[in-house]
Amino acid sequence: MQEIKVTLTTQKKEKPAADKLGFGNYFTDHMFVMDYYADKGWVDPRIVPLANLSLSPAAVVLHYGQEIFEGMKAYHTPAGKAVLFRPEKNMERLNLSADRLCLPKVDEAFCVEAIKKLVAIDEDWIPEGENTSLYIRPFMIGVDAHLGVHPAKHCMFIVIMSPVGSYYKEGLDPVKIFVEQEYVRAVRGGYGFTKTGGNYSASLKSQEKAEGMGYSQVLWLDGVERKYIEEVGTMNVMFKINGEVLTPSLQGSILGGITRMSCLELLRAKGYKATERRISLQEIVDAAHNGTLEEAFGTGTAAVISPIGELIVGDEHIVINNGKIGETAQMLYDTITGIQNGLIPDEFGWVQEVK
Ligand SMILES: *Cc1c(COP(=O)(O)O)cnc(C)c1O
Image: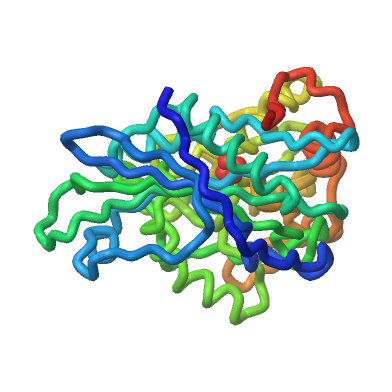
């Protein structure tokens, strides 16, 4: 493996108070960077003081969106050890996204090591306090100065980190979700299954509309018939109907969440019936009407589990579980965060120490 050159900052920043963090507002002292050249491969892996980038205004990422990213978190266990949650899955997914956007693949094991090294260096940035963690944002951009539309020959892979509190101001309180029936996020054959900025720029208009009406996020329907449930803005979605947990199957337009995967594994290990299949919006509305819709919740690294208290479908407001968190969502939240924080034994081998 290549050696990672470390240059430490001489000006450590002051750390924000744990109760004022919010999400993604502050950044740690260092970042990881490496460059890719088509004729050399990945070179010059380095940890350096966090600083602005210098790019050509013709850099392809600025014009054609050749960008992918990941989102993961580091936690402190009660014993004071810094740990990561299934980081190899993030690097696996990064390569899946890279393939679709014609970006170069990375050495997954090397990148996990690089991230561990970066976390170890900025370990004092892992906040202490309930619902806090250190959010890690690896990303890759094409930086060739070239206005033709071609896959980039010079790319950068960078990892920055941000101490965070709750993703939603609601915390674990149920959120209100607007079912989007006008705009769509992704179609099969597109790149909905990748973590790329373009999926998010496509979502902003709708997100703004939902927020303007007082709702936290948007629930997307399939891009062709606008009939089947896809996912929520930054989360996958699960429903509990008649005792069975249902989540949309991965068919190319939905992001395959690591929290989603972990929830499914956990549910099945605990003897719940958990099914991945196409789910129509009508099925959810019908279940709400006949009293079998027991729970709905989002799953994602940022919020882990986010219970949905209300779904807004056209003029109808569907209140779920009296607007309270349900038993399954609570169990998943407690178990996953318990494993992440080292409070519950890690039977699945999901947690890795950084050093
Ligand atoms: C990141 C993301 C998720 C959640 O994935 P996790 O790996 O669980 O964090 C869900 N949907 C979209 C669109 C995402 O970008």
